[in-house]
Length: 152
Image (cartoon, rainbow, N blue to C red; front, side):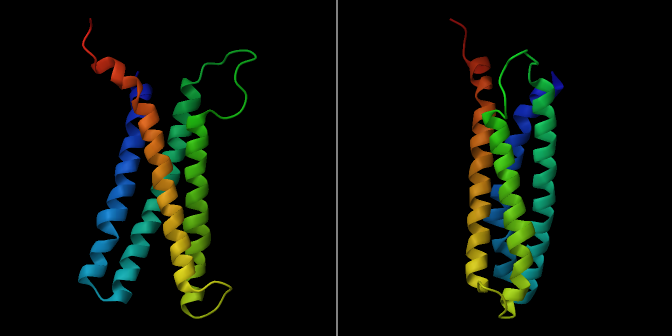
């Protein structure tokens, strides 16, 4: 019972975190600090967000597997929700652990892509991750609609 409720609650919290980072936490330092200081603050915010995202994904995968019925000859492969979670992990891995690692070299004028191109790629991957997590939150929240309907 608690695991099922957590499975429904966590994607919404995760989506809220991603929206807060994108709309509030990341822009605010650039409005109040020097660009170099703001960049360091935002880099720290995105580092924390990446690890939280990986933790949320792992927890949701574990909760999903515990909830999944073990039917003989049943569904093979990941469910749609599991695919969404794995998609968010891919976006995190590419966006933070790959692209973000290239930004210091690009800032110094090294590498195949410049800082602006890498930043755009990072933003696109973050937006894709947020979209995937929002779809996941929408999907797992759907069963609660039936609970809120008045009985006829």
